[in-house]
Length: 291
Image 1 (cartoon, rainbow, N blue to C red):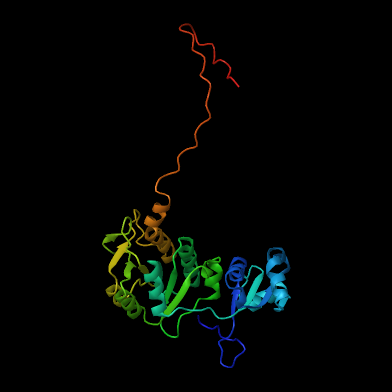
Image 2: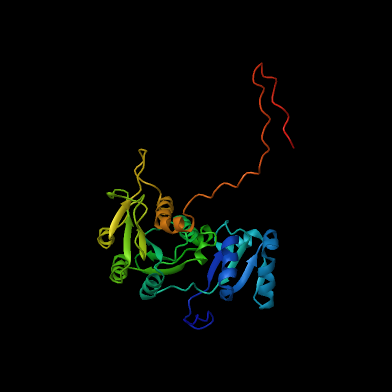
């Protein structure tokens, strides 16, 4: 087990800021020992009672701040009344990611040069919702990180996935592929239909830059390229929406295995037989129901 760096040690990476109510509470639920300090707004106090009691018991700094003070700390108005200072997030190495996916026959999503933190956060949230194991972020050096905005938008999903990162995603995909992991790329002009496609596990779904899509080097490392068919005139989906559709397909067989058929309707209570209708004559109205 890796030893967590001491944030007070010389040369240690600086603490990270996590803001947003669900994001912060998820850190508290999943890695409470990583919390170094808590800052919150008065209106959020009721939602934070357990967190604040635990932080006080551990003698962590806790500060009730005004909204403008929280805004300066988070560098955004979208702090939702909670800012945490935490130890830096742990990242898997490529071999650790491969070991995990092979061992569990798992699934991960990889992003090549996806830059918008709101898109990244929405993708992470969808990946967590569909039960994926990990996310692999690929971007030019320095190593890509997970922006605080992305963590907030993920609404706690960032604590449900393991994360890995690389400055050369195609090379990393090649190494994963060499371990027997299937690599499937999402491309709007691919010939294969994503609907009904079999995502053989362990698998990594790869999505590319918001405008440029996947690079040619990344495509070359894919065992298959799939497209989401559309019926309209717009040529493609936003990358976070496309990710949600494709992730649903990645886990489709697993979900169908858990619930192979629609739930049977509840049996009806027995009903007394209705009285026979008169054989002839005008209808005089229905007889009263028996109770």
